[in-house]
Amino acid sequence: MRSTKRPSNRSNRVAQLVRPLVRALHPYVPGEQPKIRGLIKLNTNENPYPPAPRVLRTVQAAVDGRLRLYPNPSAEGLRAKLAQLHRCRPENIIVGNGSDELLALAVRAFVEPNARRKMPDAKWAKATVQYFTPSYSLYPVLAEIHGAATNAVPLNADFSLPGVADLKRRKHWDFNAALTLVTTPNAPSGRGYSRKALETLCQAQRGVIVLDEAYVDFADAHALPLALRHPQVLVARTFSKAYSLCFQRVGYLVGHPELIGALHKIRDSYNVNGLGQIAAEATLDNLAYYRANFRRIIATRGWLAGELTKLSFQVLPSQTNFILVRPPQFPAEIWLQSLRANRVLVRWFGAPEVRDYLRITIGTRAEAASLVSAARKILAGGGRIASTKWAG
Ligand SMILES: *Cc1c(COP(=O)(O)O)cnc(C)c1O
Image (cartoon, rainbow, N blue to C red):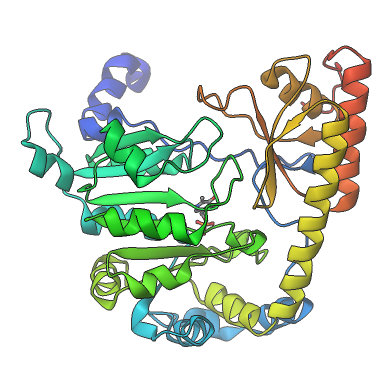
């Protein structure tokens, strides 16, 4: 009884143990991972195809008494393989527990915390994380966690990249920002940016600039050479989406050894789990399998875009494994619920620039066909949300 006497006072006192910054924090909201059978999951940009059979066998064979040992602390074997793939040195590479971890490390290594309203401009720039909107919604969260300032600058209305001359004229962009994060190809719009446009931006930027290429394997072009050509440029890649390895959490950054070395200094000693290292290395030995899957996903992307266009969806051009679409007749949020009632899960973001859109992951051809059937049914039924019990 005693402990329930004044619960509100007590929980208030416990809350005081947490830093004010953390108490006020708006955490990142990941896409739903529901455990509903028969659900078609097109909401978190996972690859619909499993890892290569040889990757699965290699991971399975590694599950034995060795699990008691610490893994290689710097993912040496994996870094050597990645260096070979990208024609650079292992010193140019750091592997992380997903690229999310590396983005967080970059904020901690390059950005001053404790941004204050009245800082002089030069100090403010050193405490600034800069990014375009819309882009990856984790960026502002990482800045907030660190106590850094943010500079969110809108992309052009069609989600294309503003040119450097435009950015200079509009004055909102900070060419001295300590850290600039660019999602390329962009998420959630799916738009790709040319290497030339990115290089022009990188050359104008005096702080560190990370090109977050999480979806680049589904694009016509990539910008990796920029990380080896310009010392302030880092390129982020991940095994999650294109290489069907979200579960294992492996991502990496490529760049100048000075910046990469700074990140190595501040990471956890064993930041990449052993099975993840083994899975990622095996993945690099089976690239042909994955490249065939990229072609299938790109083909399905074209098919789905065509079918949805026929149903009067506005489909934005995509260089990724998802499409951003503006659905007809009903608000996007109603579409989200109606599709869910038809066992198809897609993603909707409430941010003003994208609230009229749905983001749809490209699944298998059969999954895409189910989505199209569900959309037809919803249009025929006037958008009503079926009151089925299954959704719980
Ligand atoms: C999914 C995603 C990541 C994170 O990838 P992980 O390696 O799984 O942490 C990073 N950036 C963007 C833009 C993403 O969409």
